[in-house]
Amino acid sequence: MRVEYDRIKRHPERSRDDRADLNAVLDDGHHVGSLSTVVDGVPWVVPMLYARVGDRIMMHGSTGAGALRYVATGARAALCVTHVDAWIYAHSLFESSANYRSAVVHGTLNRIAGSEAAEALTAISDVIFPGRSSEVPAHTPKQLAATQALAMDITDGQWTVKIRNGPPSTPEEDDEVIPGLWAGTVPIRSSYGPPEPAAWLPPGVALSPSVERLYPNEHAG
Amino acid sequence: MRVEYDRIKRHPERSRDDRADLNAVLDDGHHVGSLSTVVDGVPWVVPMLYARVGDRIMMHGSTGAGALRYVATGARAALCVTHVDAWIYAHSLFESSANYRSAVVHGTLNRIAGSEAAEALTAISDVIFPGRSSEVPAHTPKQLAATQALAMDITDGQWTVKIRNGPPSTPEEDDEVIPGLWAGTVPIRSSYGPPEPAAWLPPGVALSPSVERLYPNEHAG
Image (cartoon, rainbow over the protein chains, first blue to last red):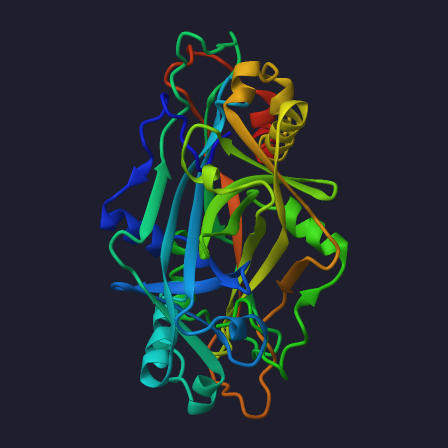
């Protein structure tokens, strides 16, 4: 199985140079990436919610605790985002694989504050909870003060995208083909389970439009 | 929204110290992590398939190409694994959140070879394609030679686990509650779409048992 690495002869290069491919990978999925940096010479990594806004990646966490205090303005960092789209069943474990889309963006972290931080928070909300920002009040000054926002610019030549998207490779001369053995693609899908209202919510409160739109098939009838 | 960082007062610590929690996070999901290391002082990260085998994490890629040549035996590394389980809709963007389980394991990378590499490949296959290793032939020497396997030991005190698992926080005195606005949990689920046979497969080949078991509900009737 090879998720990230191409065999030299068999697979055409999976790397993509088109900025549109980078945007498509960053803008899809759950918007959770792994943010890596170096602290005292040692690798450091943490999951982060993020949103791409043009040529910037916005991320945030609380100022109160933990990990973000290690991340200094000006630190070199790399954000890794991976979507696993399918499992590829071949006739050997070696040829078995995954369809995936991954992006790694290298850059420099910058802390942002004030109205820029508020915009970052809203941008992240808008990709994760589309429509929700118009259903709730604007950020309060207290909330903004408790939030640490980070930005990383997307720079030409400082990112990579790799995509595998296809069926099991057609067996070549020296590949084993086992009569009667299935081979193919098992797509992986993400969906939402039934929404669960908060226990503190009064009974009878209808789903918000921002939540309702997550279940487009529920209203076919 | 705070995926990784706890607010000091409101949330009890999300960190877990129990090794069983680490195992549960590593052993669940798609078995794709982000492997971080430091190359020439700069953070370097790449998605990796992995499997935990006891106190070791096994990873692999091809010897032929790319990224793995940067990863030296003895390099300090960190593997980050994140599962996003639900979106938490609160009455402010600030209180909105995610249910998640994340693990970061710090350690030292070791290249492994020979029978140990073969065992690593099979272990990774067995978590991603359960049952498949008994349906296909054993690795050939040629395949093993083309595979780079890596191992990282899990060491006490060198890993962290964070888990948020619950409904939206009950609003406190100074939190905004908006009459008539929904709040709650939207679970995120992963499932498999219909299997797609490879075009080169002769017609009429039945699904392998290892694939069929991915669709337990298809055979209820």
